[in-house]
Amino acid sequence: MIRLSQVSKCFDGKRTVTALHPTDLHIDKGEMVAIIGPSGSGKSTLLNLIGGLDRPTSGEIELDGERLGGLSGDGVTRVRRDKIGFIFQFFNLLPSLSCFDNVALPLHLRGWPRAKIQQRSQELLELVGLGARMEHLPDEMSGGERQRTAIARALSVYPPVLLADEPTGNLDSATGADILRLISDLHQRLNTTVLIVTHDMQVAHAAQRILTLRDGRIADDRRL
Image 1 (cartoon, rainbow, N blue to C red):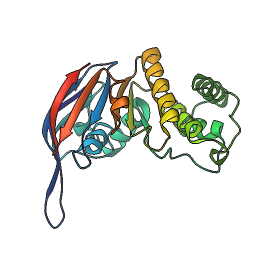
Image 2: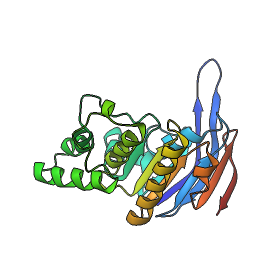
Image 3: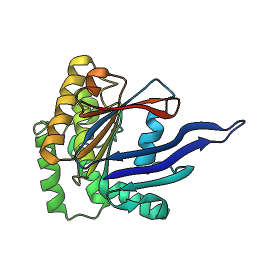
């Protein structure tokens, strides 16, 4: 499903900073993997490279049978659009759109028929427990409800890969636990490959496998 071959990432400035040293990694379809490590260890860099949000300095990334390095910018955008769902710490919902319209927006951008958009968006919001909150604006919802909306939006096309960057980091512990249970439940139901960057060991231990990054290298890789 996801394969990295000697992938590295350097950032050039007054001096060159190596955020990720040459790395090999294989993640099977349907795995739920937590990525942990101290700040600056390369966690988000690794996630952004896998998600096609950034290009590696060297090496090759293969996602669901496609080599990202051989694709044009439009090709990488297509892979992100069709095969990857993103969940961020700060929700990134459009404040002027309702819960329903935030979930429906990616489907409108794909040119889906209106009736199909209506059906899919309603189905997803009911799946994440927001069937009664569809017309509410983000400011009218709790943090947990906004994150549930963001998860529904990320799953709009049932992508084979779900990437989450600190999905519980902006929530209180009880709400974070609810979101974690939801992600775990969706992972089991949909057989989605899930990668979660987290500082929370409770979140990490909900995964099947934990990758520990340190100084831009995988220091430990263990299955639970």
